[in-house]
Image (tube, rainbow, N blue to C red):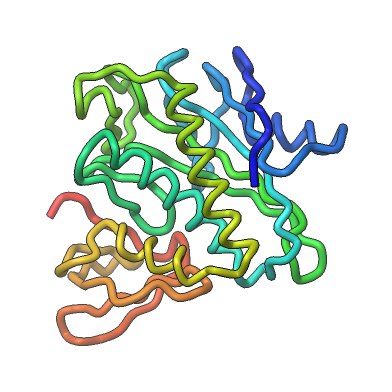
Length: 247
């Protein structure tokens, strides 16, 4: 399984939006990827914007048509992208992990963010667009985001965006092929092995309550299962719990 040559844009509002519009206008091959030097309206999770200095980072989106996948199993798409990113970036720096559900962290700092937008037909996913921003060559961050970091800040080296994109798309293609073949055990196992804070007790916030807990499992739905210091098991879907970074 291969992916088409990526489409390069000098500037766009959002690579996710551009790709969604392109899919509305014409037939777009699976694993078509769009990348840009600058997004004027890059989007993150929870409606946040994504800070990226023009020409410094890798901003890209790709499309799949996983109509074989039931909507209740959509978290596998998140795992595919996160795992590909983690494996590629681990080649350049140590301590690269996946912060549930799909952020990429270096130690306690955020290196990548991903926004996945799925369209459903009945109970299955007809189209999925996954957009990622990788902080690659940015030397400093000016927004009030609490913990951004770039690969340049970690290593002191500059990187070619097209080379990193090629490596990431090759890994995404590999794991998406496994997903299509229903070999999901490999994806899930490797995802769990790469998790941020997979060992020991750490601080979380659930609404107004702060507690220490350890990660026990990630369910097929994407639900995070933790056990607190009192031995109580707690389960959370996306946005229902926060990782506290200052321990």
